[in-house]
Length: 264
Image 1 (cartoon, rainbow, N blue to C red):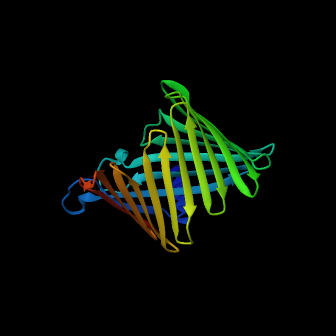
Image 2 (cartoon, rainbow, N blue to C red; image 1 turned 180 degrees about the vertical axis):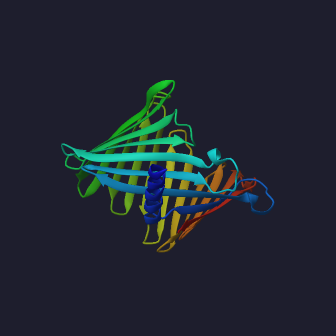
Image 3 (cartoon, rainbow, N blue to C red; image 1 turned 60 degrees about the vertical axis):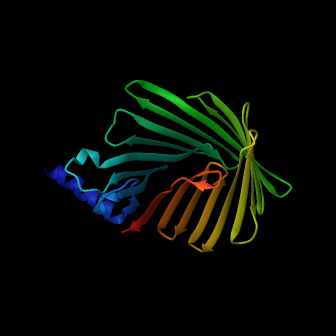
């Protein structure tokens, strides 16, 4: 009993020092009363042990229920350290209370070489497997920042390369594979407006427009002709998303979601 009390007191002490965050969203569909609300509570903590930085957290549903096992949505832990000039980190996450399967993320970055590596994998009762690998190499060219990122998705055997060119107010992103090529040109028109058209080798075109309303408020609209119009409005802790399917000039209904983050 003494050990249990000590562990509980330690946990409550850490939790008090690291305040949780409540996200309140509106669920899709029609509901009566408060059933349409989908509150999520997230909490995380960090500490250092020698040369290793540790962080961990949990995301859980805040809806009233008698099934306590259904409350956790994800539990994660991360460790980071430096090895011979490389910053190395590993992160594991489990969904709900299923501790037999976990998603893993490994990252390594070297600032001197301007090089970073990222690997995702999964482990479980059926064994372990690597899902994706990517590397990013950056360099400066005539005052512009250029990055090259080859990517390999082992789950569906997709391979592509992403090239980013960033020069002050203009950003050009090229994504190329054997079958698909896509170019996005993002232009900062002024301090409050940014426009980013995208076109691919199939002739599909989309345009994103971002409007800064204030220091902590913005409106972003993404138009895909004959497909959809997505609008996101951020106002401090509030986020509203509107997704509208488009067929020609007709809007076939709209899906609206609203979310608010609350810091205790």
